[in-house]
Length: 85
Image (tube, rainbow, N blue to C red; front, side, top):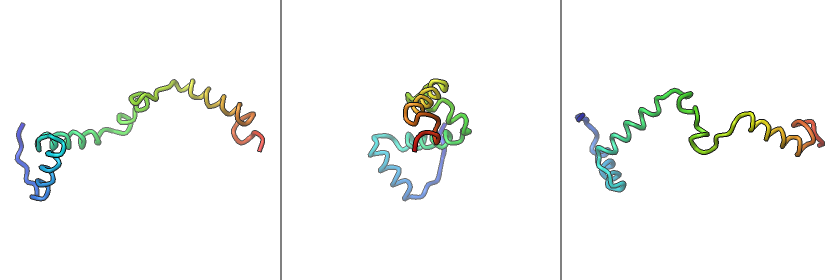
């Protein structure tokens, strides 16, 4: 769908220069800007849910807890704050 929008001349000049740098049209940049703006409106649970997994950092919570507890045992001989000073 086409729209008519009034923008200041300086913004149009900047938009045209940026579009040329990226090899995109002015309309493509505006579509991307609207999509990015809308993506920011999702609630924080939707934005964060599965975030680590999406970036290859997914690990089972119980496995992570076991790893951390094993480090406590190896490093200090017990729980944090209880080992030798």
